[in-house]
Structures are given as structure tokens and as C-alpha cells.
Length: 145
Ligand SMILES: NC(=O)c1ccc[n+]([C@@H]2O[C@H](COP(=O)([O-])OP(=O)(O)OC[C@H]3O[C@@H](n4cnc5c(N)ncnc54)[C@H](O)[C@@H]3O)[C@@H](O)[C@H]2O)c1
Image 1 (cartoon, helix red, strand yellow):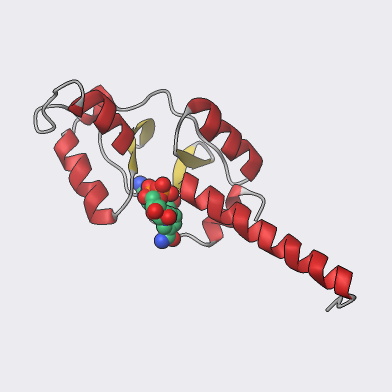
Image 2 (tube, protein in one colour):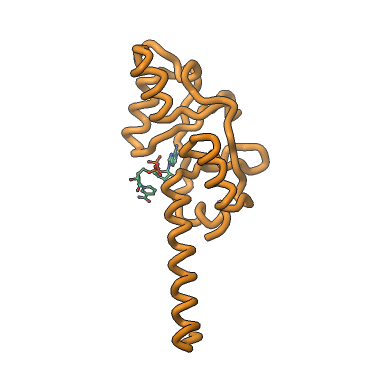
């Protein structure tokens, strides 16, 4: 579980997206329906931003902007930080920490293929450590099977 491609093996293939001209209210509905915290914003097949619960909290609620009258494109975070299936998990953690983001769209051949969250990365890291601890325990006890 060291690379983004390993995380993708454990995830459903669908990626839920929203268009920049859709309302913020619609984005919140999609996030609630799909039980996710962020949506890549796609315009004409091109990734143009990410809209997250954090964007809503900071840029709509606190700024007193109506979710029904505001377009996703006005509040989304852009430019987008992305990764590929070959990105190492350490690099994902670094990006999430440095950029204060919880989601990273995954690009394949320049096109949006998936998205990973901070929960996915933590889960992968924990799995990696469990395997290491098991291997070390087996090594110490002499059980190499
Ligand atoms: N059930 C699971 O497999 C799972 C996985 C990760 C996190 N969680 C839990 O969900 C809560 C919040 O998790 P989080 O902070 O990682 O973020 P999140 O709620 O956005 O992500 C939850 C899961 O949905 C996926 N996801 C997010 N946005 C998506 C989108 N637009 N299209 C398709 N899939 C998308 C993520 O990759 C992740 O696997 C935490 O309590 C966490 O423990 C559950």
C-alpha cells in the first residue's frame, strides 16, 4: 500500500463530479447523496477545480452567500493539486499537509480518473504498518511463513 494505485484497488471506480455552473446547493445535495466530502469540478471534460465542504464552510456560510444563488465555479478551489496512480503515499500526505487539502483528484493521461481522500491515505498507511509489524513479529519469533 505505498502508491495511489494501491489505494484505487480498494475503492469503487465511480468519481462523483459537478459542473462549475451548477449551484452550490446542488453540489451539497450530491455530496450528501454520495456521502463524500468533495467533488472535482469538471467543465467540458476538463478538471477546473475542486469543491469541498471546507469551501462551503469558509466561502459561503461565513461570507453569508446563498447556496442556491451561487455557482460552484465561484467558490471552488483552483488551480487543483492532482496526483497519478504512480504517486507515492508520502507525497500525497505532503501535498495534503502543505496545501491544507483533504482530497486529491487522480489523473490518468491528463484526464480525471478518480479521487483520493485523507481517510484513504491514512487507511493505506495503517495497513502498511500492520503488515510491517506482522513481518517483524514473525521475524522475531522465527516464524517466516
Ligand atoms: N467507508 C470507507 O471506505 C471510508 C473510506 C474513507 C473514509 N471513510 C470515513 O469517512 C469520513 C470522511 O472521510 P474523508 O475525510 O476521507 O473524506 P470523504 O468523506 O470525502 O471520503 C470518503 C470516501 O469517499 C471517497 N470520495 C470522496 N470524494 C469522492 C468523489 N467525489 N467521488 C468518488 N469518491 C469520493 C474517498 O476517496 C473515500 O474513500 C471519515 O469518518 C472516514 O473514516 C470511510
